[in-house]
Structure formats: structure tokens, C-alpha cells
Amino acid sequence: MAAETARILSPGRAFSGVVRVPGDKSISHRAAMLAGLASGPSVIRGFLCSEDCLNTLRAVESLGARVTRNGSDVQVNGVGGRFLAAPGPLDMGNSGTGIRLMAGILAGHDFVSELTGDASLRSRPMRRIKEPLEAMGASVECLGPGGCAPIRIKGGRLRGINYRLPVASAQVKSCILLAGLFAEGGTTVVEPLPTRDHTERMFSMLGIPVRVEGLSVSVLGFGPDRPIFHGFEMTVPGDFSSAAYWIAAAAATPGAEVTALDVGLNPRRTALLDVLRRMGADIEVRSADVSGGEARGDVSVKGRRLRATSVSGAEIPNLIDEIPALAAVAALADGTTVIRDASELRVKESDRIASMAAGLAAMNVKTETFPDGIAVVGGADVREGAVVDSRDDHRIAMSLAVLAAAAGVSLRIERTACVATSYPEFWRDLAQLTGADVRASYSD
Image 1 (cartoon, rainbow, N blue to C red):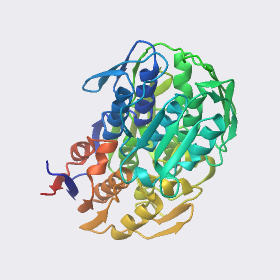
Image 2 (cartoon, rainbow, N blue to C red; image 1 turned 180 degrees about the vertical axis):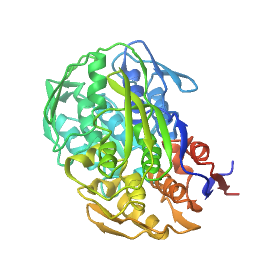
Image 3 (cartoon, one colour; image 1 turned 30 degrees about the vertical axis):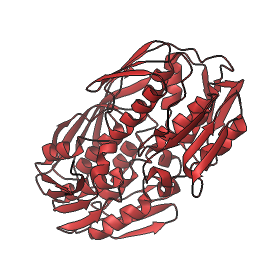
Image 4 (cartoon, helix red, strand yellow; image 1 turned 60 degrees about the vertical axis):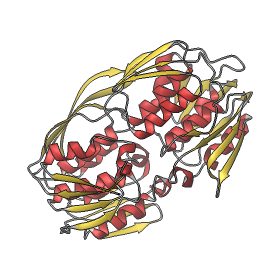
């Protein structure tokens, strides 16, 4: 089958309409893994059927769980506390969340596992999970150069640890907490800054003993016994990180009016709303309810001219995935927007600081980069007909696409197949919200 190589966008109208984004990626990963471990059947509605999350489902299946899927509704019959050895390496595709969280779980299993992924995932650092997992008693070998994936894990009997994260990372925190389920005694993780807390919320939903005190998170392990929790039912809210493209682009486009329905509103994920409001955005949030420990609701935006701002410190972990979209729309604001303390962007699916700077430069947007961030000069005369490279990073591709749509210019984006890792319906939704002509280019 021919592979998608690029997308060509022609301008339409200002963003307008209602959008329902697919399920939250972070929650879908965690729900699949914990459903696989649970005793009995679990039903996950609104599961994100993206490449990343489907890879996690396949991994859970390879480890002994039974999975059936009907669209975005997934039933998982769990193994009752401990997985079975997989027949071969588990391919986590492009997902840093998938590989790091699964590594934590497999560290508590008395067999050898190998986790791998695509070229992008094999370039991402894994030493940050190797150190704490080995302190707990597992053996972790990084098979790639420079401490990168693939990783081979020999699990077994673990002991609880107290671990202070050197860098704020929800993935590393969750890896350690999941390993802590299998440890003797308690495991405590201390964060330098608060990060997303989906794992802690899901533990609470399942009755797993977890305690949160300020920047400290503790879980009491089950020791040599199997972790005991039953299957569950939950509905995954829409992914705020996917809704962020429409929220940010509409906020920066005078005359735009967009509502994102049933979006996750976890306060550790929504710092972008605070930043956009500081820039002058007109945003209304209507909270609906809490399901599976996660708040959800609708977000409505009316576009206007924004002003520049500065973002740093404690805000960064709570909008780390939204920074590319924020940097894109900052090109349309008055003044220079400065983003610092975001060095974690250097080790995502691409070096997102360098990737955004290159993409914005191709679109005639001036930037300055720092080791830990980027400054974007607003008021740009965005270039018509630019060609940009996503560098195989879904968030770069989508961020540059919404900038072009907001600025009313045509754009060619190279290497766009990556968008399917998190938001397969993105191009359809872009066309519906703007009337833009979106065409795909394929290899022979």
C-alpha cells in the first residue's frame, strides 16, 4: 500500500464549528495496561484508536490478555495480576509513554522482556528509567546507542524505593509507580514540579493504595503476591492535547469561533488555557462531570488579536505537549513570546525546539532558540506556499498546519504519516473547521 508522504493545504475560512476530538492518549495507554493486569473484564469506551495506543493494546495482548475492539470501544479480559512472557519483542511504535510505562510493569515480572519501537523512539533516552528500576531490583539493559531503546528487562522481586526525579516527567514517575505495584513495601516518587497525574487518579479509581502529599506520590506495593484489582468500566474523555490545536488557532484568529466537546479538563493538563487567557484570549469552559477520576467538559473559543507573553517554571510540565501549538500561534500575536525551562522538548519525538524553529523560519516567522526554549516574534507576515518538514513528529506537523490555516496561506508539510500516532482524524477535522482543501501525497 502506498505510504503518505506529505499534505498540501490550501486556505479556507476562519476556524468555525464544533469538534469532538478522539480519546485522551495518556489515559488510553494507562487504561489498556491496567485493564490487562486486572482480574476479569474491563470495558474502555472512547479509547484512542491511534497507532500509539493500538500498539499498547497489541502489547497487552502479547502478554496474555484477551482484547476485542468495536470501533473506539475496547474490552480487555485481564490476566489477574501478572502478565505472561511475550513470544518476542514488544513494538511500542512511536510512544515514549507506552515504552516507559510498560517497562515499569514488566520490571515486576520474573521473565525477560524486550521493548522496542520505531526509529524516533529508538533515539529517545531510557537511562532515566533504568536507574530507578535497577534500584528496585530489576535488570535493565539499553540496547541502543547512548542509552536508548531497545531495552531488555529482567524483572523479578522488587523492593520499594524513595526516588527524587531529576527532571519533571510524568512518564518516569508513572514507570516507577507501576513498578511499585509489584514491590515489597512502599515506593515514593518526589517531583521537582507537578506533572500530569493520570496514573495516580486511575490507581485511586481501582482502589490501589496511593497517597499524594505536595510533590510526593507514594504507592504501597503488593510484594510477591499478585496485584489485586478488578476489571473496570470507564469512558475516556477527549484528548486536551488534540483539542489544543483548535483552541489555540481559533483564539489567535479574529472572527473564529470553535467549541471542543467533551474534552479532558485535568488541571495538570490545561495550563495552555491560562497562558492563552493571559494573551487576551476569549475562552469559556463548561465543566460537565468527573468520570474515572478525570474532569471533562466543553471548551469554547472566540478569536481575537492576542498579545505576547512569557511562559516558564511550573507552567511548563502542564503544557509540555501544547508548546508547539502555542509557539505556532505566537507568530500571530503582538510582541515576542518567550518560552523557557522547556529543555524536555529536546528529547521528544524530535527536538521540538529545533523543529519548530526550522518550520517557523520556512514560514517567514522569526525566532530565537535557547537550550531550554524558544522566542517567537509575533506579527509575522506568514509566507504563502512554504514547504516545511515535520521531522516525523506529529505535534510539529499539526502545529504548523493550524498556523497556516489561521494565517490563511497554503502550505506543504513533508512527512505527515506521523499524525496518525495521536490524531488520525486531524486532517478531516481541519477541513471541516476551516473549509480548507487538504490533499495527501503518497509514495509509489
